[in-house]
Image (tube, rainbow, N blue to C red):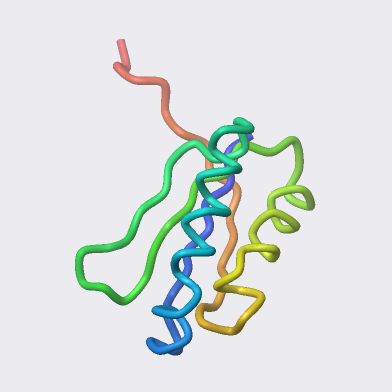
Length: 89
């Protein structure tokens, strides 16, 4: 299943400080097949990570261990996502 983590920035200074560790973390998970996609919103106020996980609990654990969450730079909203199989024929 796929799980979408919405990560609003609540402390810009902490976010700037911990962003390199965040990117390293996301990149490592991508290489393990645990991240489908990730990136910031163009307004600079939040980012999004789509996790590949077998359960909500696994996705939550992955998201909670992100350095920007651990260090209080961002908050976390996690939802299960059911992508459409396109095209719809």
